Length: 356
Image (cartoon, rainbow, N blue to C red; front, side):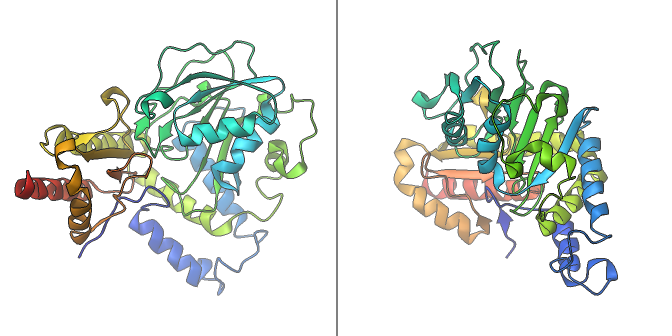
């Protein structure tokens, strides 16, 4: 039976990326060694990092004056590294979910944090719109996509101060205007690579302005100067990331990815909105294309476990909603084919026909 992978992360990767990575695990570039056992200083690994950086810049149209680095620690480490490197006196944060809250918590250890707006009172079901960013803030932080609650910021906001964005779960899903951001970071295990590597895109001129000592390992300038090679980088995930970047380029880049992601999201949201049994949890204007959250209507709440069991029996994987929202969550990242979304829609319709 075909499996349809809706896992929120680590998540689906293109089949050819998995196959090429598997080949490298057995024999990297026909040199008789596995990529798992080569030195990160090997002459045939540096070109992997260089090409990955070049494709980041090409696919995202990154202007001059920005650096791309690969680190470990996930986005959770960036919650600390961002204020360590950027927060001198005050930072502004938009609170749109669990990951934004975690970032805010870490920033408070470095200086004043202004929460410009929050949707916590509505269980993070929408993106706040009317808020003021303090002009004297050192930076303004947003989380562009909220995997748990299914909301997404789909436009590049204007900010009077450097804007920092956690794009862990929607990077490479649409074109973005990099020039509007001072720093973008994310764990790669959603739209880019297996877990283990973190990407950072940073405008060089915003660094080096805080007065505190920054430990060498936590200083972005260290990793820029060393080309992501200050310490041993996550070799295998970087290699897999490169294969995904090549796949993205071969398949039309971010313009084409956005078209496909819109089509997938529209297919599933239309099914939800036209259902007698299911309903969405996020405000329609703020719905995520990446993580589509839905529940049973009150009348059918007691059937949620039955639907999950039925969908699982039909090959749906990873659709159980996060405990903070309940219901179901279908993560529709770049590598998920629209055929999988159609299969889920068919499951929903078949179940509804039996029980509604």
